[in-house]
Image 1 (cartoon, rainbow, N blue to C red):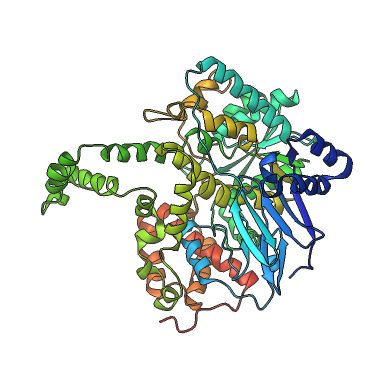
Image 2: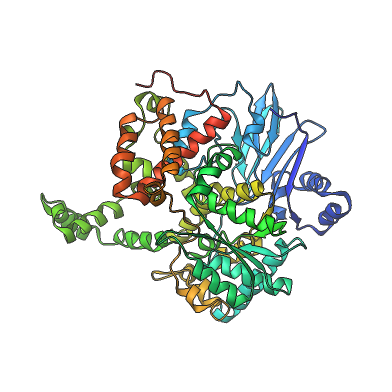
Length: 559
């Protein structure tokens, strides 16, 4: 455990009160936060923009903590002997006697990360995005200071919104630059390409761009990155990740996080950041957030289709369709089978419906996990957290509620820790212009039909940037830095050996069933490398983290 701290300030906060911002300029950010807390108490974070984390103790012994709306900056805390200790990382608050939380391991299998407020360590918690922590007179309060509130603007001309949007994007990119070499990740998608172009406008010179490729059919989109690089005349750099790269770097990347982390894009992100560091970059910009703020994920259109069923007359649903599709033998007819599946999924409310697509629940938790491990966890806890987050957004619209849901689980708990963790490991800083507070405010008031127009994803974003982005990128399908891990497992002996030995380590610890792991490698992987490769990946990264941080951990009496 690290030594006790009395204050910790991270990030680049911008104080909206001009006099407090002046305090930050003249006396430092900590003094500004102290001033803000004195004036606004727990509402202080609502007067601050930018990415930030703050933890401070007053003269009276009160501890106040807060993180930004997307938890770009992270803080953890732990009560010890009537005091509240805090640190940036969970492992800084744990010692050799701190127990591993089996529930956190199950949450990891469910989400491929461990969502706040839980961490891998019992008694150590992470501040959720948009939340504050107050420890006063021995009482601990954890509550949101901000909740997404959608207030759609009506009768706004498209041209006016487009011009405002472009101006905000340019300002957002400018705010993230640090005066050094202007650079960004470039996958060839709309978000990273937009950031590359906006850097050019904000910086007055083309960006340096960094892209990752894979020698695997269906996974490499380097050509789109090259199209964007040519279009914006960037200083372009490329690196092709190989299976040998994974073998050499998986243990290092896995152990660098303060708890198990299973987003498989972490390895490509690390190599991209490493390349930028070697190129003299101190801060690299990332495009994360565009899909989640402006309706770019295909599941938004899919869920709109399912939601339409819920608006059919009850007599039609209950009196005709559901009895018809439930008749014996109907599920054997291909087209009827699809109709039955549609009715089954559409009949389940959100966010419970998402469990139908969850990897660990589809595989069957009792088929994957040992009985002893299952006895130590609450299987419904992840869904309970999802329901809580789902209901917290202030909107009546399904798509907007999905966006807010993804701000928590896709961005704050997965994609942002991926980029922040790997850039930190590479030794550079990262900025997220797509998550700028002004852009967030713009998204909150943008009409929902501008985000998802019928079934057209991120309609406004693409139309507003038509003529700025290359047409090929506007119409391309989404891909990103997807890793062909499962495909490589079937072809690369050293990678397969590392993966198998790692996953078998979880069998020895009493977490995974031996028979499941045997089927996973001998049968399922060959049948569907991409799908089952994901299960192998998250299991491998869990074991690699445990080997580094808690080598002796095991479930006792797991049969």
